[in-house]
Amino acid sequence: MKKITTFLTALVFFASFNTAPTGYSVGDTAMDFKLKNIDSKMVSLADYTSAKGFIVVFTCNHCPFAVAYQDRIIALDKKYSKLGYPVIAINSNDITQVPADDFASMQVRAKEKKFTFPYLLDETQTVASTYGATKTPHVFVLQKKDADLVVKYIGAIDDNSEDAKLVKEKYVESAVDALLAGKPVPVTFTKAIGCSIKWKQS
Amino acid sequence: MIKLSLMVVMLSSFVFYSTPTVNSINFQQFQSRIIQPANDTLFVVNFWATWCVPCVEEMPYFIQTTKTFSNQKVKIILVSLDFLKEHNKLVAFVKNRNIENEVYHLNAGNPDTWIDKIDSSWSGALPATVLYRFGKKVLFHEGELNQSQLDSIINKTIQ
Image (cartoon, rainbow over all chains, first blue to last red; front, side, top):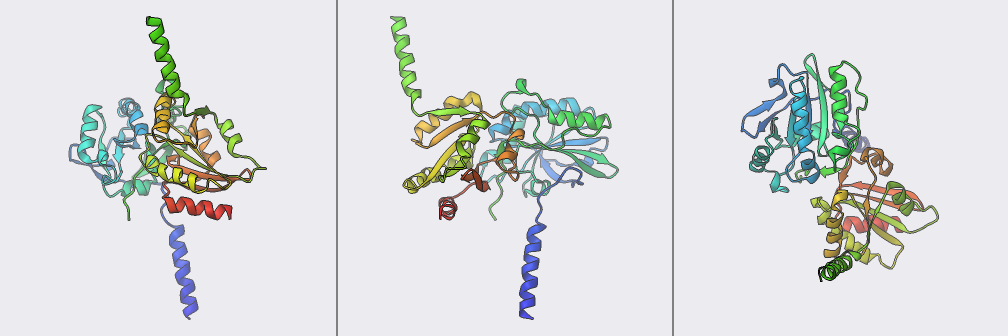
């Protein structure tokens, strides 16, 4: 009996390992969230009743890679917000490890760069861990389908972080353009270098 | 006179940047350096950047480990993913920290084309460390390593 119990315990242990959340894949249904914006108001995706979808960007203040992309994120919002795909920026870093990413610094950064989109603090890191965001910047393009939000693209904004002028592949733009045209997204997943999201020490 | 002082300035800047050497390499050159099927040296490759806070934090461990294993067939290679336009900043960092390891500045183009070639589980977040021996990957780790973790994975591999 004891053996069986040990065996079952081991099984449950391994099973719990295997089912540990690894984040979304393209085609998954994404969860909505309610996070504090830089104006201290709470923001949910459900608030955007007329949106067709979202460009969710995990970003932050301290990471030069993320910062290098913020002008391009503003440009994405200016172009696609009016077409029904607004940018939603989220900072998920543990601020005890990275004080430069705290709420007050987020407010300063957003004001400096005149962010046209919400910049939300994911204080519990639940959104980043559920989505499977690992670094900044990390983009998830979502499309509304009835009451659901379907993940249509995961990855980089484009293929050149250093110089916007040398970009050949605009992955996020191609994805949203395809969704707006009712066509399949040409490239649904890409990888890029970035700063790791700083997780709270458990 | 102006010409002469200009020459002196150029010469002194040449001396300043002539040590240390940080070569820019493309992905093919990187691969041919670390993938050596006939070589029993353990290549420990750390992907980092001067702008990456945890990378800079773990750098002393890699330097210490280089000393610890200096009598063994272990080669610790630092591969920077700094912006290409910030090459001088990288060289200054290597000089200021007295880093004597091989340091390369990777110029490999779109990361989406080569991240999976290092390891399919790598998200692209820095730092990341990969070990090669006899031309084959032995271990991949995404994230920071502390001194004992780093030394222990090397010890396990060379035993």
